[in-house]
Structure formats: C-alpha cells, structure tokens
Image (cartoon, rainbow over all chains, first blue to last red; front, side, top):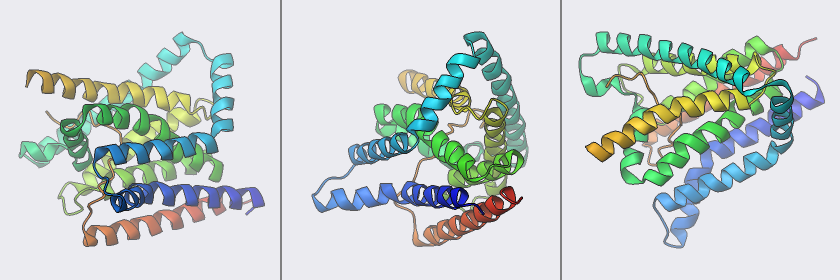
Length: 230
Length: 45
C-alpha cells in the first residue's frame, strides 16, 4: 500500500469512528451541564457537519467546478430521473417482496424509516435537517467521497461503500427482525445505485446528493402532509 | 403504506441496548477489515 492510501485509510477510520460516536459523546458532555434533548442532537450533528465540510472542502470545490463546466441543467435532470426511476423500481420490488413475506402492515416499514417517522413527530425542523441536509450532504461525503479516497478500484468501491452505508441503516435498529436481511438488501440496492451514479459521473458527489435529496423529499412531503391532515 | 419510499438518512439511536452495542462493535470491526482488504486489493500493482 502506498503512503497516500495509508493516510486516506487512517483519515476515513478516524471520521468513521467520529461518525459512530459523536452523538453519544455530545450527549454525555451536554448532560454534565444538565442539557439534553433534540437541540443537543442538532448541535452535535451541526458540529460534525462543519468538520466534514472542512475536511473535504477541496473535494467539494473540485466537484462543483466539474459540475459547472461539464454539466448543464438538462443533463443533470436526465441523470437524476434515470437513477430515480431505478431506485423507485427497486423500492417497488422490495416493497412487494416484503408484503408477500409479511402480512403485518407495521412490519413493512424498516426500523430506520420508523425512527425517521418518530423523529418527525418529535421535531419537524430537526427531521427536515436530518433527512434533507445531514442525511443527504454529510452522509454522502462520509460514505462516498471519503471511501473513494481509500478505494481507487471503481467496482470494489461501489460494492464496499454500499455495504458499509447499508450496514449503518441497519445496526441502530432492532437486530432481531425477521426481515433484517431483506431490509439490508434493500438498502444495499439503493446505495449500490447511488454509488453507480457517482462513479459513472466523474466521481462527482453532487450527482448522488441531488438524486438522494429528491428521493428523500418525497417521503418527507408525504409524512408532513399526513401529519397535517392526520 | 409499503416501504417504497424509504427515507435514506441514518438515525443513530443513542439509547441502544448492550446486546445491540455488541452487535454494532462486531459490524464495525467487520467493516474495518473489509475496508482494509479492499484498499489493499484496490492498490495492488
């Protein structure tokens, strides 16, 4: 392994450990001064976001320049629609398999989606931040841009980054669910497509960010509408 | 509503049980090993 690869690997490892532990760390730190609740979660997410944007500012700048010079609105729209259709197709297939395997309607929602929905009931603003900003921009940088720096082989990168990101969607929920592997495969398929969109478009992080933003916007709007009429 | 529109954002549940915590540690270790092997294969000349 070259020195650069070792450095990138160590950099990702530190970021990954920070990503896994910052929520708990800030929760403990703020509880020492008697503060708790969603505001603390928001502040810790915000601080982590600032750190990630600072660490990857050069990559973000480079990708933005590439987006401005090589892509126009029509081209971006075509790419986004193409990948969104594939993701919707995957969602429909897995939704159908879920409904065939399990007739209990509650179980048709993955644990992570259930937690996102619970977050909506607790705080609308924080949920919007988590689903449309943090989940889209920061997680994409951590699980794609950062891993891409470590794994230069495109095929291995697509598989490994999707595996890691899918695992993250599963491990914070109940691990005793009968549909755990099906949920894992569903997330893996989603992230596989997003990773493909990244490598097929000059490793430009803005492409999966836009696709994921629009994709997340749909369940977010549905949840808000259901809350309003509900 | 079936799970067609998943919200693709990870919600970290900080109140995880100790058995869940063990599983998280195992998954993280596996991820790190997979990443290390992938990096080595990817950078092989």
